[in-house]
Amino acid sequence: MKHAVQGNRALCDGAIAGGLDAYYAYPITPQNEISAYFSQVLPERGKVFLQAESEIAAINMVFGSAVAGKRALTTSSSPGISLMQETISYLCACELPCVIANVMRGGPGLGNISGSQQDYFQSTRGGGHGDYRMLVLAPAGAMEIFTFARDAFALAEKYRNPVLIVYDGYLGQMLETVDGDPASLAGPLLPTEPPDRSWVLDGASAGRPPRKIRSLLMQEGDLEALNWRLHAKYERMVSAEVRWEEISVEDAEVVLVAFGMAARVCTAACKRLRAEGVRAGLIRPITLWPFPEQAIARAADRVRRMLVVEMNLGQMVEDVRRVVAGRIPVDFHGRPGGSLVVEEDIVAAVRRSGAAS
Amino acid sequence: MSASRFSRPDALTARAHNYCPGCGHGIAHRLVAEVIDELGVRERTIAVAPVGCAVFAYDYWNFDVTEAPHGRPPAVATGIKRVLPDRIVFTYQGDGDLAAIGTAEIIHAANRGENFTTVFVNNTVYGMTSGQMAPTTLPGQRTLTTPAGRDPGRDGHPLRVTELVASLDGVVYAARASIATPSGVRTARARLLEAFRHQLAGDGFSLVELLSPCPAGLGMEPVTAAAWVAQELEKYYPVHVFKNGR
Image 1 (cartoon, one colour):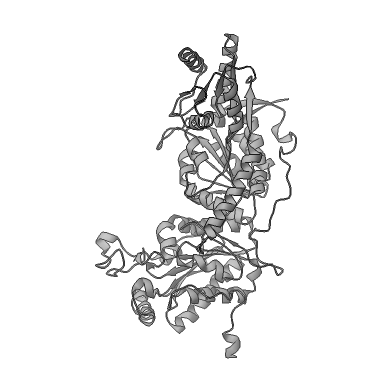
Image 2: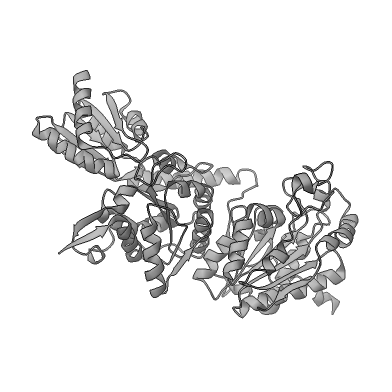
């Protein structure tokens, strides 16, 4: 049976299916549907809903519930995510699992309330201080928003690290039809082992020694040791968690690289190019970090050129060019400021890059 | 009698403090530990340590402690207490942490009536960063960043946090005490006990401000610093129970 689902609502349903215990957020467009819905259903289910006084407070409430070993979520949009960066660094340093969703809007500054992909750098490079990494999941539709929100808690607990879900305001607002009720679909994609709870603060009872959660390490060498231990964990994420999708890459002469909403438009552009005799394919990174380097490198050995398409001025293209390392031409087409990329422009860009090479 | 009186509370570890000679944090930590022991809640207590000198509190208390980003302990404590409502949760914050960078978090946690306790240590300076002006620095008081003394016309006025917090409907207990004299220490202990009792009863938000000496930050000998707190600080910040019950 077909269901109509809005992206932001799919996030709510996914988080609840994933065992959400507590949600904290501050109002910001284009993701207000999330707190409106949670304010109704979470109290009914005996879960915590709290509207925070700021995004800074919201992410620190998430920090507190994570300290207590509960599954906590905050959602926001670009400027609000900027405000959370300091605490995201603390969450990574203290190895606290939680989920953060950024429904990206146009920037910089107050920007607008349209959809954009201008937070790729912030998401993958860390807007906060110090060496840290987060798994960054980039769904391209309501169904993926649901499954990623559902599985993100298990991923966060597996690595004791925050997981960031990013999608643009268009995907957040759009109503899509999906086959079947998302909430009744098969179990988590991930094998969920019982999470390690040996670090949780819930009271030092029954003779267990008190636990401390801290990132201040003043003894010589201690902080370096923490960094190396975190680095080893990030390397495990790189080897185990990279995800991407390939469409018609096998025989392609030109490969488009795009994520999220831009990848949806690229899928349509590929079809049209194929109909017009251009063998076009698409690589869609699903994890923005870790970045699907193998897929890009393999394609670079086979195809003549690539075109990276983003709803920004060119951010992910830097990662693609880093991996391609000059072996083939990598062109870019993008629109910043909350404007949507369109099929015709992508087709034209492919034709232009073909004529040039 | 005296031997048992001065034994170490269960809620305090045996670790030697890093605090400077004459610093009030040692007394404040011990008073909190005594109250936790008296209420028999050590095994279900979770504390939130601030950024500042007292970040090291997690080494000194014998119960679960987390750090928090600067100024955010009330938001972190909210996130703990909301999911573990039967635990005893408190924040321990200095004047920079609570009254400058964390003003929004303390006011809103208090106003929501979050059922945790805040221990607010007011020593009028940023101790850990070498003695800059704090929101609570007195008019005319010389600090690293007010070398000619705090000029309220230029630097603003000292903030009376406890009076401000007492005005909020979500607050059940708001009191100030001084730990610069033996009698002040006894009063402080009683007020901390009352604050934690309100939390145990589920009454709402409670706060105790402790006027505390920081000899290093004030540039004074320990004895002089304690006398200054008793003589000067208590004049500007009345030692009083501003609210008890609603």
